[in-house]
Image (cartoon, rainbow, N blue to C red; front, side, top):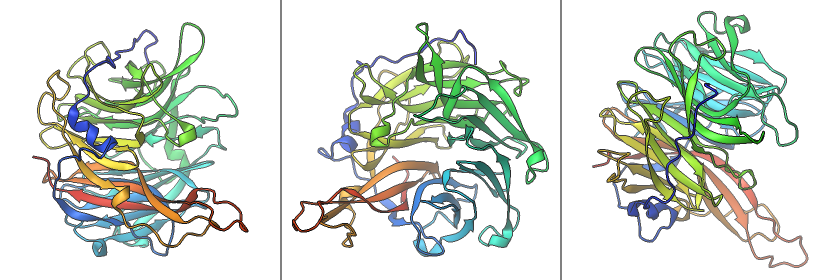
Length: 449
């Protein structure tokens, strides 16, 4: 990335859009929208805890998902036809790994076939469906990289170029315990992608670490990315900034990617809120970016940025959708067929969808919010495994969004069951709030009007 780029920071003093207060604080309620499909838990071949799902739809409206097993390895691919109108229609295949999957990424090729990238602590797996995707025999998978915990793939850093060739962004492993080199790689495969030697890792940045990346391709086949870049300031310290990066030619060479910093990025690892940045491209290749930003107070804000030309310069427009301490883990941005943005996000352990119809980064932009699901409205679990814990509640987080051909938003997210209580039995250890179980969940909404 260009070393001379400057921040295009949106002013945090902008007026909060009133409709966006609904998800962070359920009073007043977000405007209602009829659900096409009532939310349901995504199945697994045998009972298993699962975590953050990713969802995509193909040109026929079929729903594809991938979600990782919570621990001890493996992930699941799920297929649901015709908009996924009922849980019974979901067909699931186990994708085996050694080691817990940190990131499960999904991309569909031009024929609607799924490609999956699974990143674990020690290695990276690539899987591709060439037959019946609802059967294990229809899949081929392989370890494509053994990195011995030196590198990491984070965010939705996996994509297919217009020729259906797989690519992803990889960075030095981020650890709170040890400082390592700050490097970013563009990893490509043109043929033989089920063999490690078919893949080449190209260092494209030797001073900045790009994490939480989202990789996409414009109509000309040029890579574009939204990332959180670790940028060295004039005082020698590093600041993590949400940024846009692009490359037009010679994209495997260091220094060939240029970019613009947008605003400081927000994370709270103590509260298990990682960096979150998401990007979609219009039909003409113009980037739209949403992310959790860090306000001067240190609190999070939900920002939306748009650029139509020369996007490595100061040509971005932005709106502050929501400034709130209740913003939580995860967000995802998608555009409908008219290029209108739809954004799912988490606030106060609930999932909401904000949408805009016109001039969405302008001063008069309107972003109504509709409810996807509130954790408080889910039926509480009655099986509590911990001593002296008496209550349980659902916490929703890490949403993923795709827009079906009919304009209906399809949303997948993590549902985490947490126990707590008031220690009614003094003869037993006091209750320590903790997770009882975690499942992946799916909901479908009617197209916003």
